[in-house]
Length: 424
Image (tube, rainbow, N blue to C red; front, top):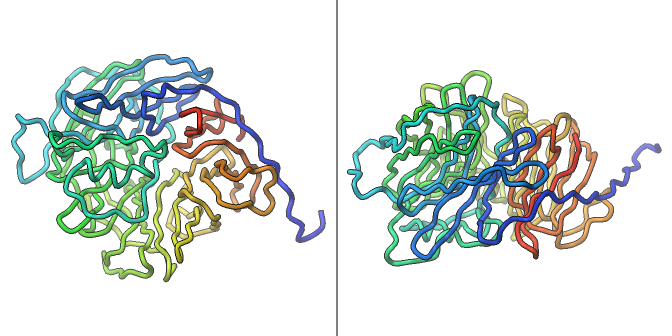
């Protein structure tokens, strides 16, 4: 091949696994071997409840479980622990019988013991808007985030004057066979949205966004495997979001998001900076690394265990999907960006990194992409494009397993569907 010539990569279409019921508001998924764990919400006349389904690689539903703690709740994140239990997290109305206390406490409502023992899997993360206005109710919080947190454009919770604020974080622990093991809550006192969760040696770590009197803050907390939740750590006061987590080798947890506030001795560089930091096992926050785009609003939305980050950049009214490969010490090794209408969602393959987004124009070296379709790009370890996969739908979630390959959850004209491609 002549030096300087860029090889052309043809866009491949993916195989349909299944089309989903229109009544189910699919929010995200986990992939474990040949099983897809799909989670989301179902809105009724009086309330919204979460749900969890196990779907095999042929599209057959293995089991379904309603996640209903007896009040209004939504499911927005999930992970799998070291024993194979699926943890689904979200927001709920604080039970009337629970008396708020100055320090958040966990409330177990089931004490059954787990029986399954698979290993953890990939935890994708839905997207978040670059800026969120201050809100006073969970309905307003969910509505303000719905266009991007709910990529299938379905309202999580219709506005109703009689519905109470979703001011508690709720955790459902489910066995691999679909049995509800336990339900646990922690009162946050203000509207809250869980964005991401991961399994750690100590239990389950989770992060998200908390409404404040002046805007929004990020929060971080963890639970042991019995549902005992530690005191949440709040980060920021007016415009800070935490969107993704990665387990680190030293026992710390890396956190990723965005902020327009000064923090940990660092000052704002751009309109809004993408931020990276860590939380030690002691609960202490580490140094903050900020993006360096002076005229951009940046945000990290997703992260993989190999520190492949996805997000967006908004500069002069133009949005780009951005991906960056970082080292385990948070040093960037390569980055790329594309004009897009959605942030980039990321996942790792065996030897590849994947980015899922909706471009607004053709990408050099990519042949066969159609305007209006989403696109998944595959990169090698050095950031060289190695593959491309197209879908006529909007991104919701991305995952990977060696059995199913690349798995995508998307919404098109015919509703929500799951696709896959046997790529490594």
